Image 1 (tube, rainbow, N blue to C red):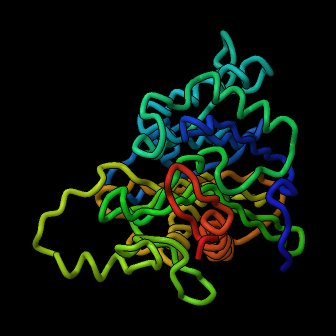
Image 2 (tube, rainbow, N blue to C red; image 1 turned 120 degrees about the horizontal axis):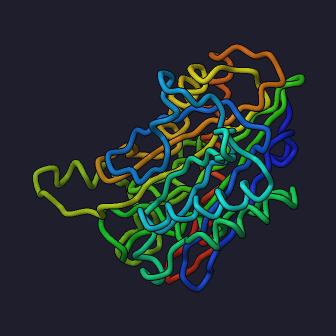
Length: 320
């Protein structure tokens, strides 16, 4: 097994667009020929688009784009930009009287970091698709859906740290599989190789990183009002040949990567979601795919904080 660039995975292109001053952005993951897809939403506060159609009992088998964005529920508008882009290219589901692109997506809450009135919109979503069209390796850190991302928020804005967008991909024989994730968790990010904290709640003088679960346990009966919107958004992309049902199972298994790299995770104020997109080119077992998906997702989460830069008054992992 060797590490590859996520842009090496054939048939899928990724593009970012962002407003650096406003501290928000979006990431388009496009498969023009259609990808077998699934989703698993674990957090208690999701903002999502077209996740219902990914249930195995529903009709549509393939999708053409996953749009990850900031902006909370406002940011779901970025998916409309992908709709326009794909319709112009003649990509979509034939309904007889026209083509309907299938665009799924989810948004994270970054409104407290920059300008709360600056949100990903249709134009930004379209721009992300144009960036994907170039086929370049997506930038990590303060880009796309990770532009305004932060972590370690149990004690509020004063002690949280900057996070961002991360990727990690591998090739095993002919199989290619990668993860892209915007990490905006309530909890801390853990180094999956060492168990050390890479980012999370800062101490009082902001010289070290504290332990969120320990703080939660110490005041378990306080009823602290924490942020009502956080959310880590990810997508597993692969050239594997799988069904829609298998894609949903792989999305479920990929959440093990969240659990390894984020603590706590899947809280009531996170909207943690993972999509899967598969091009259907290489035979592979779903359990092997799910296990590998969890591994690459955990490493992509680590890359999201390791590539983030200090911004908007927030320190980053590189500062430590």
